[in-house]
Amino acid sequence: MTKILALSGSLRAASINSALLRASARLAPPEVSITVFLRLGDLPLFNPDYETNPPSIVTNFRSEVAEADALIIASPEYAHGITGTIKNALDWLVSFESFANKPVAVINTSPRAYHSDAALRETLKTMAAEIVEPASIKIPLLGAKLDEDSMVSSPSVATPIQEALVALCQAASLYKTSTNASFPIR
Image (cartoon, rainbow, N blue to C red; front, side, top):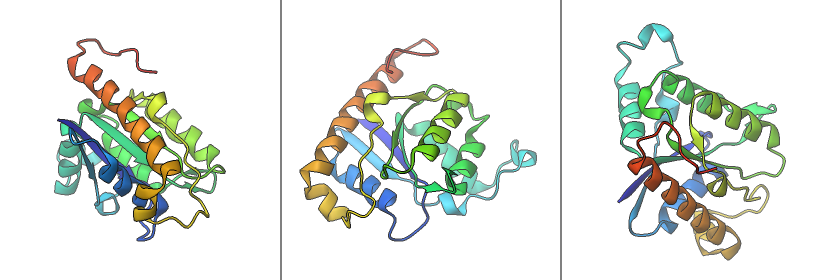
């Protein structure tokens, strides 16, 4: 079983990014479990003073990251940058050893969100994440008026998601069996 943790950078109830992550969980093959972490908005603002004794929600978040074989991040762009929600979550993982070298797929739902896509990738690279390029896709959903059910039933959305999940699972398999600090998944 491959365990994937999905993180949405949007806290909106009607978030396209969150809907896409839920659709991804529904489209995953039977041997893949995708859990959407629903409490990113509950994480307190990052404070290095709490690194040695973090709040319980941070401990829970880190535990889920550690147990995951890979991560999927889908986040909108706010003011040409990544959302505070994703930045704060990643800040809590900066010195978390279990995050280093973890395979990560970056999903972009808007063709206009290239600033945040680049910023997110730069942050992840700085944190030693392994960005899995074949799993990091752009699906133009902004303005498409698709809900989760429509995403699952639409071949133009479902097929790229399924292909990305195959690539991410392959990288996760390499990650699990690799004894090296990095591996060729780009």
